[in-house]
Length: 323
Image 1 (cartoon, rainbow, N blue to C red):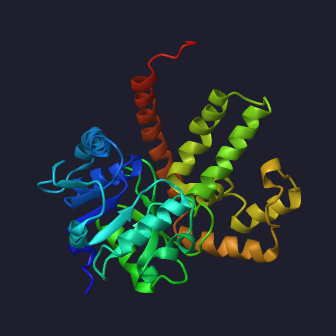
Image 2: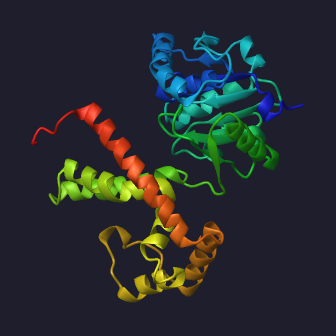
Image 3: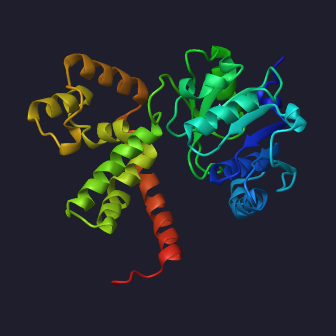
């Protein structure tokens, strides 16, 4: 019988690079024992250094009672000790052949009740579970760097993944300190990277065409949209920016004005059906709260985050070179 998510005691981490080490730091900070696997030369030393580097942030964030940096057992390859793990997080390099091989080996080395999650950023579960002896227990559990601080984990299953496995994974990541999001469809890049790639693509284009420098593009983001998006995301930010119009009027206005940026040329048409869906889902998101109250919360947040951001930038960069 499968261990309950809150009763997990030992996690198996396969891959000890940046992401694997981040999982190790997070797991130890939450009080979980770790068995780490990586055949690379000096992999153990690098992983332990990265855990030590992350530990001050873990202390500031808050440690589980008795949590320390030790209780990480390192192995160069899968062995009998992996029969002890209650959950596996694979974080090998983003190579389809490598991941398929490793996931197949993991599936033959663990108990029959243990769930395997891959940290893959772009590959889908259906691509990765080909050699897995129990594809019904395989998911994507995609984190964001640094794993020990960024809360989101994207949980993606394939058509072969059992529904109770998805439920278990969502509860596991939640209980142990992340904020999981169930991605209901297998798509390239899941959700977070799809959004990031759209932003990065436009940023690259603006620099490549000589429209702006890299610093100017970064400034345009960190001093405007980035501040607001970090609190409410694109849809709620849009709702508050055009509050006087009302939700439906926002999209009716966009539809009627026919202003199309280059990055939007392949976007779906704003049909009445799409507008209905947007309005219904955004209304549910607002949940009866007054926009004015959300705006007050936003303003209080912005005051504090700008102060914090400016202090962090001053500590990192010091006075501007052109000051």
